[in-house]
Every structure is written in structure tokens, then in C-alpha cells.
Image 1 (cartoon, helix red, strand yellow):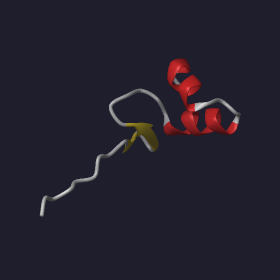
Image 2: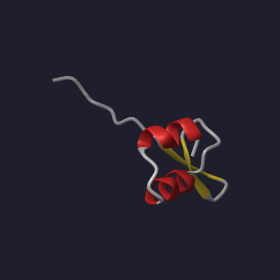
Image 3: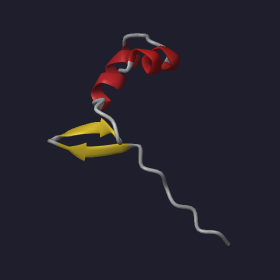
Image 4: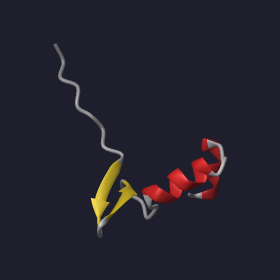
Length: 47
């Protein structure tokens, strides 16, 4: 049976959570979504 490893999309650095490999803070993505932006809009906006 093949072993499945989980992909990490979030990293903790500088006492905050970030989208892994980017300079986008995770809270900015969450707040944008809570404000009604669609996932596609958040991606094009950059958070």
C-alpha cells in the first residue's frame, strides 16, 4: 500500500501564520473571505 504524505499549505514564522512559500499572511486570506470575496477574487487580489 502506498504511503500518502500530507502537503503543508501553512507555515508559522515571525509569530504569525503565512501561506507557505509566500509573503501572504493567512489572516488576510481569512478576512477577505469573511468580507465576501470569492476564492478567485482573493487569488487575483493577492489576499
